[in-house]
Image (cartoon, rainbow, N blue to C red):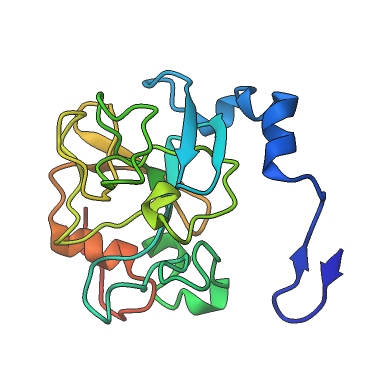
Amino acid sequence: MIVRGTDPVTTTHNLIRGQWVASGAMQTPIPVYTCPSRRVRVVREQDGNSVTEGIASDYGVNYGSGTTADENNNGVFEFSCGDCGIGRSFAAITDGLSNTFLVGEKHVTRTGLGVFDAATGAEHDFNIYSSQPGKWAYTTGRKAGTAFPLAQDPTTPFIGQFGSWHAGVVMFAFADGSVRSVRTSTAGSVLALLAGRADGLVVPNF
């Protein structure tokens, strides 16, 4: 089924999540979604209404730079509920595709590897097959800015930020398709400029 319009939607199957789980397909590792520095794992979603399990992804979309009204939803993907996880058009990234985060390595602690805690929100490792990012947005993406500095290492407490298990850097794919490493020491103010898609400010050398 294809819904026509400026933002068409395509449905490619009519299987319910329970059928996907039963098939075993959701537990099949897909190398492109996993960083070699972390192990492949199955994450189980438990939200009180359903249970879905699937292979985790080490990468998350860019939701924006912060928690204020202006910064809460200024990334390349929608963070606010209602349209959670929906990507914006290239035309909406007015700061420039080469200056804006698209996807980055999700911070996951060693103790949180493979853990989705719907009750407390303490950890948000998550499977790539879930169809409900809205209720728990940090499962599928992260933020970067003064309130969300890059995790220094796997022991840094989880607050919904980007981070890796590489020494001193986090890998990001920018909206122009380039992949670059960003130092974990990068100032939060600079991260905010890279996460925001339309602030109109110049990004300093990072």
